Length: 319
Ligand code: SF4
Image 1: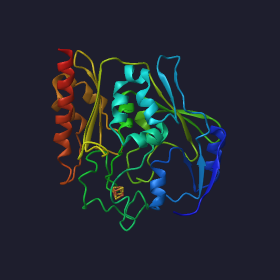
Image 2: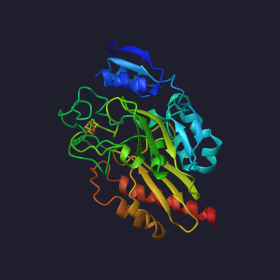
Image 3: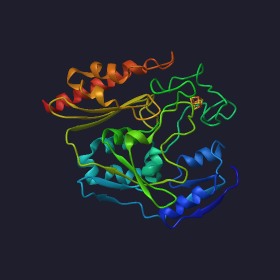
Image 4: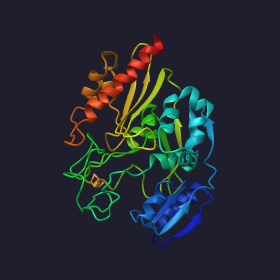
């Protein structure tokens, strides 16, 4: 690990200013992803700004009938909150499908949506990787790509966003709340938070330099039956090959987003109109323009079958 300096910030604006002031600075909270990357020297911050004292660990009701989830709320606390379990079940299910109990106790809401890809070449510093070293190339293109993306990828990077919680937040139309170094605040719709890779896969979110996530807000509950179904190579502690987050109403209408397939939680609202016609009608539209590799072409029929399974469960529960 490379040497770095460390400070504990007292306010969100102080933390944002501290990171903005130093080109090599990064925020740290739970550290469940960043510390691993530092040990491998994939991330080499020169200064860490610890945000754990910022009192952003509450879940509060909003005036609009939704919830405001503080950036430092642990994944465990969020998944087990009675209001989340009752009204946003897709979120609880997605969180408990990810990582391990120990990691969920430490990982935070903001950290979860900022986690880096698990592309194997990103972790191998002997391999070219445009995300780790811009302009160096992409070892995954033409390499081993079974886990990687099938849609929304680019000629520079075919990695996926690896998380589960974010897929549920996308279905719930969450909003990311931030503070900038000048003290102004911003609300970023979740749909716009993660970027497609394009020519700059090292730029992963809409956050500006020093901009700190303070909360994630949920609109008022939308009812329906909530599902998170994750298909992976082993039963626990593995990233999704494909996942489906869905909220399905008794008449068969609903919302759906896919994980494990793209640089961001993949939701195509126009495709949701086809939900009453069945899974194939939805995935045909949602994955139009897909660019799978030979290794990961199987993800397309797998996404359809996973959604079909979720729809069948919804139908059985409403029967
Ligand atoms: Fe790097 Fe992206 Fe290529 Fe993986 S897919 S090697 S993360 S550029």
